[in-house]
Structure formats: C-alpha cells, structure tokens
Image (cartoon, rainbow, N blue to C red; front, side, top):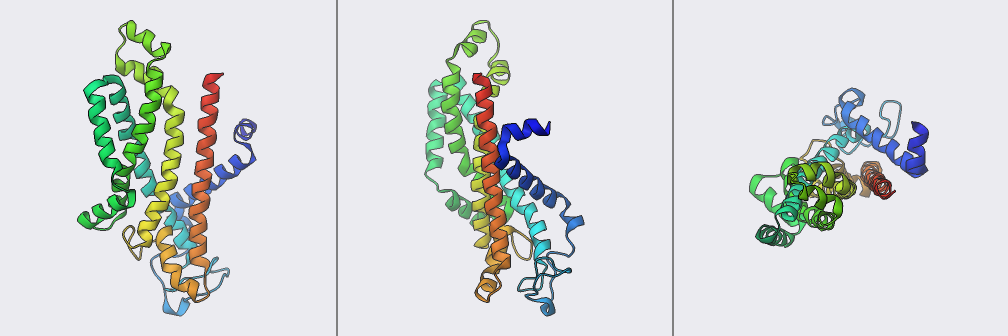
Length: 276
C-alpha cells in the first residue's frame, strides 16, 4: 500500500501528505498536545526564547507560541473547509442544473453568476462583516458566496462537454433519469476537476481568511489563528523577535502549497486513469 502511494504521489507528494497529516493531527489534538492555554499569558514571560518549557518561545503577551500554533491550526483549517464545502455543493449544483435544463435556466443562472463576478472576494467578505460583525463563520460564508461563480463556471464548461458524449446520450435515449445519469456517469468524470478546484479554493480561502484575521475582521483576539498571529507578531518583529510572525506565515505557505500539490496530483492521476 505504501509503495503504491509513493509511486502515485512521488517524493514531494508524500512529503506534502505527511505535512498535511501533521497539521490535521495538530488541529484535532491541540487540546491534549498544547502544553499551555493559548489565550493566557504573563507579563513576566514576555519574549522568552526557545527552551524545554517553551519550545518556540513566547510572544509579546507572554503566551506560548507553540501552543498558539497548534490551536491556530484549528481555525486556519475550519474556515477554508467551510468555504470549500459550501462552494463545491452550490457551485456543482448550479453548474449541473444549468447543463441539464439549458435554455432560459442556463441563461438566467449565467446572468446571476456574472453579477456575483462583479464583487471582489475580500470586498464581499468585508461587506458581510460590516453587516453581521467580525467572525470566522461570517468571513468564510461570504468568501464561499464569492467563490461559487468561479467553481460553477469551470464545472459547467466541463459538464457541457461531457453532456454531449455518447456515454451520456445513450442512457438518455434509454429513458434513464437525469439524476441517475448524473450520479452514475457524469459525476465520476468531473470529480477530478472538482477535487482540483477544491484544493485551489482551499488555498485561496486560507490566504484570504488569514488576511481578514490580519486586518482584525476574522478571528478575534485573544483566540489563536495563524493570520492573527502574523498581525500580533508585527510589533515583535520590529523589536527583534520574529518567531511568531515567521512561523505562522510558514505554516500558511507550506499548508497551501502542500494541498495544492496533492490536489493537482490526485486530479491528474484520476483523469489519466479514466483515459486509460
């Protein structure tokens, strides 16, 4: 099994999977792994260096950086997961409805998607936060709405091509319902595109949610979040203590790169397997 995974993903893919696994474990088991409460600090423990007690030192408020990174993985993954799930469900659903019904339905849905294209992602998130207040859920749902037209447009294009192929036309002529054809034949053939799109959306969502937290519009202090840690670490960086900002930034960059690489490999392999 391990040899098959290594052959499919390659060295970089296995490294990426390993890092993603570590991040997931950190997020799941943070309450048991983290040695300190990530929200509680001490003025007498400010800017401590790495030691056996504080593995990565402490921040400007005397909070353990290692503990905050572990807990920060939770919010940093939860937000993008909300974005990806909502985007995949509604984007795929809209695309398939437009393809199967066509005509006025397709034209009407296309106009709605064009309208949503007019709103930049972060601007829509900021408008939602201005109305409902700053929170991770609000920011994630707003970004999901902004991502839906991109996902729907790409999947619609692919599904439209598949719609006219013989393996779809044949069961239609036999009187099989569109729902059965979609689930049994069409979905497996557009799944690689959905997987690849989801990983790309996850990466963009993680970066944009981190940017919102950096601006104080996402996760709120004193909660732990990688984007918020970069913001909190700005002053520390100027004072010669760069650990918090640099480590949180590296976590974001490596996680996004790992997910993007794994998603691309999975999508490419699945597509190759179908053609073979």
